[in-house]
Length: 306
Image (cartoon, rainbow, N blue to C red; front, top):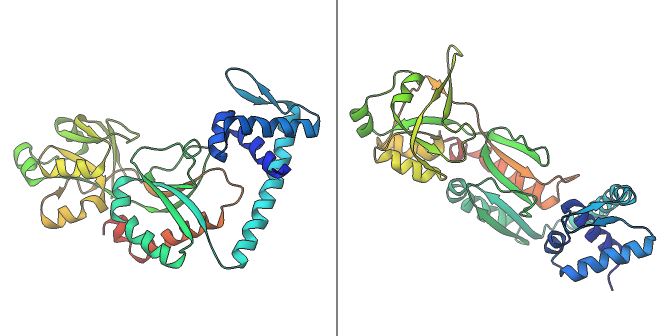
């Protein structure tokens, strides 16, 4: 028989997601059972908690008050449960992580293998995509992202490290098209665009010595949502690319790529851990985050490329 706390959890899922169907998926319940649990809770309390229409589900005034109180209580229960589990020095359960494809392929296999040696009872479900996933709607426990400082106020985040970027082109391309002498010259060149770059075709650069800033509207005959593919197109002489240094360091060392406008640097981007709006991070999430921070600190070249 389902207890009141389980029915409250289902109610909070419906309230947060404004959808019985989404709550059912989150709780791994049938839609009919989800509806029944909320109805039973309302019957127990003798008050309507939710307004149901064909378009959406919303909280009544009483429902809003109840949800605010219950979130605190459920969080305390979860913290107490987590504390008991931690007291046994065992982390376990499923940890669902989203991460960029290029980062995941280079950095995460080794990191995850080491993590599993320390915490064999934690199962990991890893999704690799360069798209910026909806961490709430897609039901991840956390995401690793390489981007500018996060602006989404519905999530919480933790900066792990700076990810340096560099402008590069192949010697073949530079011999054919000439090397840019200033950021303004980029407008005359073929540039390779990263589809998820927030600036689009506006490339902003800052002089490392003088602090002067220039913004150039570049031509993007090729755009792609994956950094590895852009790097290889760059190697093949298709144009100038702005990419994380860890993606191109090996090609620069081999001579397949050369830095362009080395005195100028783009705006800072970070490796960041993003989370749903937890009141406090679950132990497995916090432990994995700290582990990644330790791995990065032990070998900066893995993320920073030098």
